[in-house]
Image (cartoon, rainbow, N blue to C red; front, side):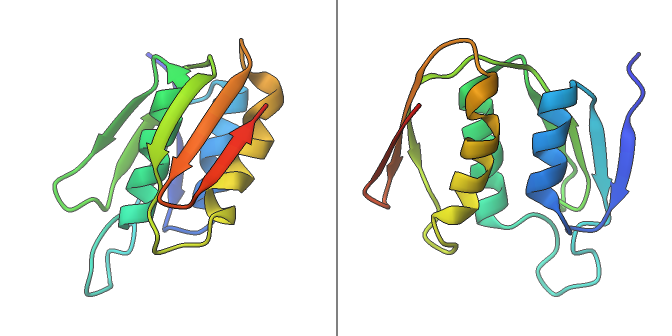
Length: 123
């Protein structure tokens, strides 16, 4: 069984996911907005997890009922052609930061269409 690195809160969410993917180490993020009125992950964070899932093979994500605890086991970066519906509640840079960091570490070239934003990202 893999040892999980554990983090608390929603700070550096994207960076934790990027480093988990690059290192191959699974992570647990707990107490995600557990004291706020709207508990857990936001729509754009869930959208980012879906994008990562589309670009990888074998990635596993588990959320508890309230969305305040995420278990993320990274898969292999494969790339390919992906059409992803981005959340409009955050700037496109939210997704681009992750895509640019991971672009060099995939098996094959990627074409990523960020639907809803009008952006096409080719690596």
